Length: 432
Image 1 (cartoon, rainbow, N blue to C red):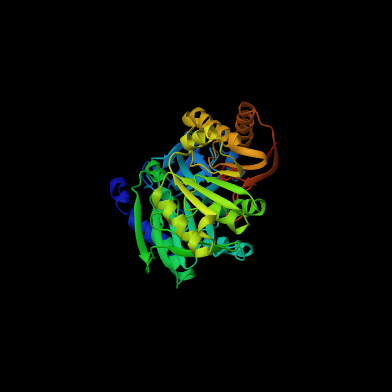
Image 2 (image 1 turned 45 degrees about the vertical axis):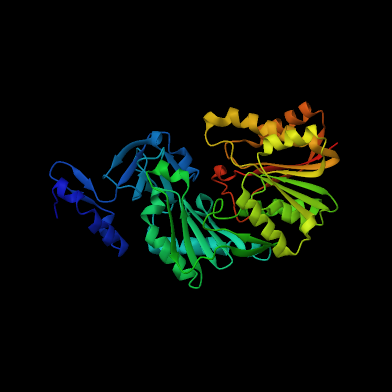
């Protein structure tokens, strides 16, 4: 059948419906026209020489690597990715408003992108988390590109699922994602927290909505023997910093009998872990009074003595400088600040911020003390972060030794082909 060009583009919904029913023999072919061809399956044609990253199975296709877009795909639609010689390279989602124009779904030419694809990928990702279930009933079940589902974050807090759709491709397949979650976790409540700034880069509005069931005001979880109440509807990220699970355990193991300061404490995660590890006393410091109120509720939930923990609300940079003048000291300090780096343009400013806060903390540590210091920005390279902490120690007149390097927990994996998935870095420093 021959379609007029303009009329053909009005039938995109028919083609998508046919594809969903498995009509691959139709949707994979080219429809002949009198003087040119209309491609039913849209295509991205890659600039010569720029296909090398795809051959290494890196999942991102930057707009500058795209020579031609064929077939007028809509935002989020699946496109085939071809080299200049016609070689099929991948199947990806299309995002016309992002610098990352394509995100690869599959490198298998025989794998269709449909509801079964997402059900299968989520099931596989959940299966990879079995080894972490003993540590906690709160886990990241899908970690975006590193689990073969670019743009999908899925966390489970006890019986509550919280997901984020970060890309145009995931937004396009939202109904399939929700259907897969209902299928795999029929008893769980489901909350969508697609409220992150990165969606704007994809041309998407923020959205927070209860998808299924009842979402409690706080969800109770446990982690390595410590209880936490989590605000999944209004808290940071999806409610809790699940990526710091292993580092909280490291802090607990180092805290016995120590005076501990937890800076940027949020709802008290590191400080409560320290109390669970036998800390003599913990000070929780954060700029959010509601977060500190929840930290206090978490202390009560664990049965830790009222005098074992103080909360201080204010600016950590200023308070640490004040405490240095007052000659206050601690045996162990945790620095887990928010992301200082959100673009390459902000890197220099972020370096100054990291040096300032580490300098102040090092001045407060007793000899033989421990500094746990972190950066959660993927743009901050490990070597640069170490140099910043080293320069801070030099200015503070202290010497230190890295005894452990820390990173995101294992349920936040890093694909070998996607090093950008490694974003969290930390140092445990023994300070003389």
